[in-house]
Length: 123
Image (cartoon, rainbow, N blue to C red; front, side, top):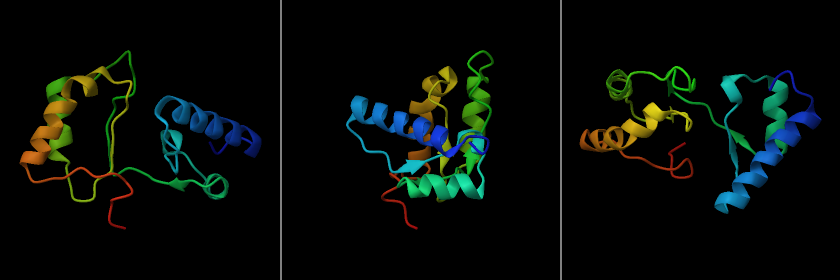
């Protein structure tokens, strides 16, 4: 996003906003900068559009659809890195995540962790 003009940023963000609303009847209010790339300008601009920027505290290399990580190693990495207040970034296009998400959630809950929306998250 740092390389985009304000007009291009607005188009990309608002097109996504509209698609999410049309598909899920949900008004976006949070934004995660793609690739975690941001600048003071992009943060200020997306904030002016009404979005709160949220970063993650855990991510792993799961985004490349043509080079998906090993399921067992990925699950182990996720579980070993659980921590209070974690905001976990798992890419929706990952087949690995699709296959392990149910067991990751169950194991995390068995360890005493809870899952909450950002609105419920203690600030």
